[in-house]
Image (cartoon, rainbow, N blue to C red):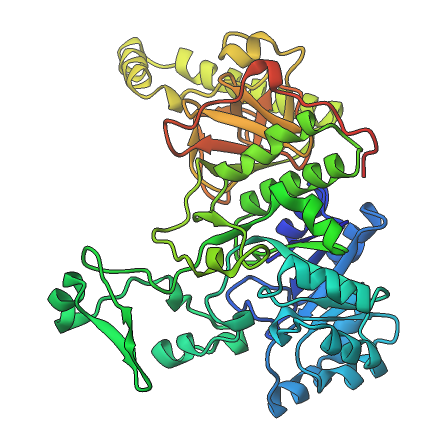
Length: 497
């Protein structure tokens, strides 16, 4: 089965490919249902084209799944040259009016029907096939039994189904609630997620809490439908998150060709960890790795951001009807992304720069009047971060004591981190390596720095066997146990992708 992952920006796209996605879906400009995702603009097509070369065989899907008004179609037509610049393998659409436009202007790109079209039966699939669609992303309301019937009736049609992520309380996501309450239309990409809000019945609160409030239909007076509110508010419209990672065999048996992960607005950490878990689960299902090898990666799903998990409509609609309260939570927080290591020449030049700065600092200190020097030394004792320490000097921390094995890596901080922070490194084939000896180096000075902050590009100094495009994470909740040393580096799957 193919694995399709979400990407709300360039970095998430790179990490989705790196962590195992066969295809990634993105939104361009204002024509997708996730306007609040970063989406892609300007000359980012150049970077994506290079990424596709780095990941041969990986596909790029473009979501054009808004409901198009006349002005939207006019705007799209005016942007045709911009869309042609992207190496798009297929367009995901719900609006039938876009079909001839795409077929005429992008003859080599496949058409995928968006789940927004709520296609849930074999006759509809036959109709979309006749229009030229290669794939249908079935409505989330389709059961596994219905999927099997659809595949048997139209075996040549590719079927894609959501396997993981947030569920919409409205039918196939065609919701009017956001537009009604906030003036932001979900069908134009501006969903405000009002279904996740907590609601109260206002002045009828006491009656609602009593359990005596109920609905009765005019011709069924003997049937009572109770309305009950516990505590002060209720998340009556907030559905559970979908998680089918333990049921991929059933999805494959039903005829699902492609598994889709929801979440273009989710974090880079979520995209990487969720993609990795499903990659390992698929590889275990298709006998590329063992179930035992896949298990720890799948367990990481429960440490990434999620609400209560369920199986949606696949087995029974009763599970989909159960709502859940509370915000999504995660055991870990993304701290930084790891880039390429510095070359030996770059490292040597930086070390020399730091050593020169440190020597200059000591020379200035030694040249001071004894009383002034004593005052400075007292100040430095209280503020040791003011004293420069070259990254290649010994005696500057535990990491430097093993400097022969340590390397410098490009590092982009996404949250504040200091040297006392508990961190783990995770990668596509690594559960987690804890590191208490890491250091940060200022690329401008070649000296250690005690902390880095959001969106600061510094260098990471570590002796751990990490790789570019790995993730540095911190524990959010104390009860989140660190990875066991014996399972730090997992076995690489037999047939790497």
